[in-house]
Length: 362
Image (cartoon, rainbow, N blue to C red; front, side, top):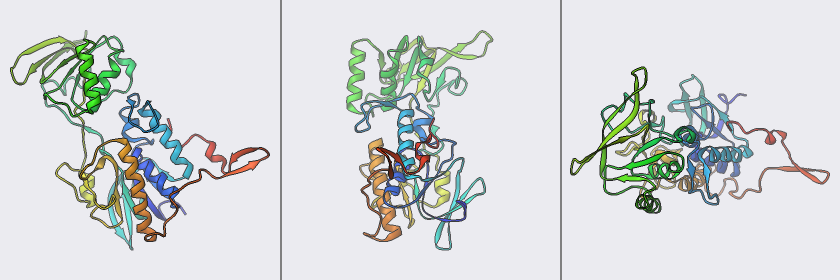
């Protein structure tokens, strides 16, 4: 029987950190989870957008990159041997004979007793600033993501934003680039206070340039063939209109990513005014048997941190278990690790496949 014919315990839509850990906790709780991933690899936003970005807020790990985090989570979840289907984008979710049917754009239909939505910010649509030249210079020195730090060696870089990503890239690139200038349109920052204080100290020490409240007014530059290429930028103070022009070969816009809500609306889950899924009472949505975790959700007190995604994943797995088996009848939450057998004096995994490269690891 293939995966489209059987009725699964739980299907997790999305293979980012929240989805991977939900699958892991479902597996340790005695369920057999399936992950449906729209891309051809696991890891989500961390792997797709920020493979070389330093990550500092994972408990027990002082520092790692987005790719390293994704690889580690993938290896961990593969221990519970989930079903994984790549390149499957869920178009509709409907009831079929008392279970949920997930209709994919590929034409495949998957049936399940429970669904956990872990789609993150969907298709990773960046929030644009709407400044002159933004589209004209996209990919020609202007970007919304940083994939390879070495690309910025010896360059004058302008970073735009006031959140954690802007702070992180400023700290990371200052030792690689010729110069780093950070601008933000407001006087205050959204980033963690510790990161903000670090950035302010760097600016005072003249390790970076920082201008607030400033915005981009104009981007200029051409290559030898007369095609657009970022060479310099003009910024202005949005309170005094004072202008500054300086060289820049790279502009990194860190304004965040907006959720692509078309699919969520089609699935019937209740959204808030930001297009995020409303959850209540342990990751539940307005639809019985459909739960949600990670960046796709919002509730009172929500912080968009990886550590919170891990907590939500454990809670969602418990809620799914209760939904399927009833309260107190689900699998154990404590896990003794992969099954092993002894060969002489050496312990080996019971399933040789456990020693293979995990699906989706890069």
